[in-house]
Length: 397
Ligand SMILES: Cc1cc2nc3c(=O)[nH]c(=O)nc-3n(C[C@H](O)[C@H](O)[C@H](O)COP(=O)(O)OP(=O)(O)OC[C@H]3O[C@@H](n4cnc5c(N)ncnc54)[C@H](O)[C@@H]3O)c2cc1C
Image (cartoon, rainbow, N blue to C red; front, side, top):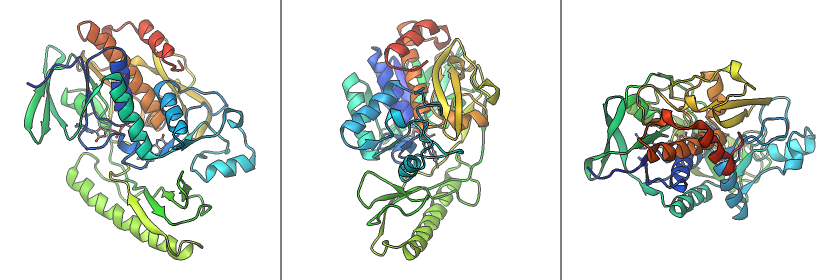
């Protein structure tokens, strides 16, 4: 038994970083474990280097908090760009064309949104600085392998690393594994889906302006290619299928690059810089929690909303995300955040995006700290207090 943190966060993707920073900021002794040796998940090692979207598609910001403050740090370091507020919602073809080159224009009719192109290494650095600054502890190369539950709460979390199998006894667990690994281990109801994967990659030595499927980056003559989807579905929870798909995706991406180099003027000296280190899996498991947010809930205010998000391809629509989308009857001391929260497939399209994942992560972190200050029961958290704390930290509720 190697620790009794107040809050254990499982998975250091965008949601897990936000959760750990928020929990530690709120005074909880926080441990963040990550299976790989890099933080950021799909947003960094997956090369999904676009934050879509922080607005409602009608010119108003709806995601703030830690996501906004990460962006400010990235912009200050010269490693992120986004349209200024006065351009949001503009359909001016010149502006739309400018931001499209960076991959920030999606949906129809096309308009400028509050979306951000960023550098993944800088995102990692900001995340690590924030963890260190708030005192959240990070342990990488550590895999959540299972849980022991008793009387409706998670009593122990089994972790695996080079040291072998060890046990943590946290007061509260936040599942930001992307695949709801903890929730499923605790017996929570869930849905899962097979999905065709993507594999984004970067090209060096290639001038910009090469068309809609080669996004410019912050680096000169370095482009981001959103390759995919693969022509078949994979089971994101089956390592053998995922390995086979990764090899197929690499081969497909390599062929696509060779064809692009041949046909694109100015690409004669271009090289394939790097592939995403993980497959681009848009969805795998989703929690079926205390509330399942559905399409019909668009623009519906919830009294227990702890985050909000627009929709990256739709204009003028906002989803309030109730706290109950993060909780489950399976365990009183468990919260779920990020891309595997409790929504329908339709709403998942919006809540899986990095800004929304960070917003639910931040909410879970604050809630986890509040619960840990008591007996760990996350469903007993005073949502009014939680909402006030989140607002004070800059969240839009
Ligand atoms: C092809 C594609 C395109 C996309 N385009 C965009 C876009 O343009 N803009 C946008 O905002 N979003 C986009 N998204 C969505 C977005 O990238 C993800 O949904 C989001 O980054 C998910 O963040 P997360 O933290 O919830 O999960 P992840 O990023 O999946 O992070 C989960 C972390 O948990 C770790 N982990 C998993 N299991 C365990 C375990 N058992 N123990 C310990 N650690 C574990 C993983 O290693 C990982 O670091 C796209 C997604 C894909 C696949």
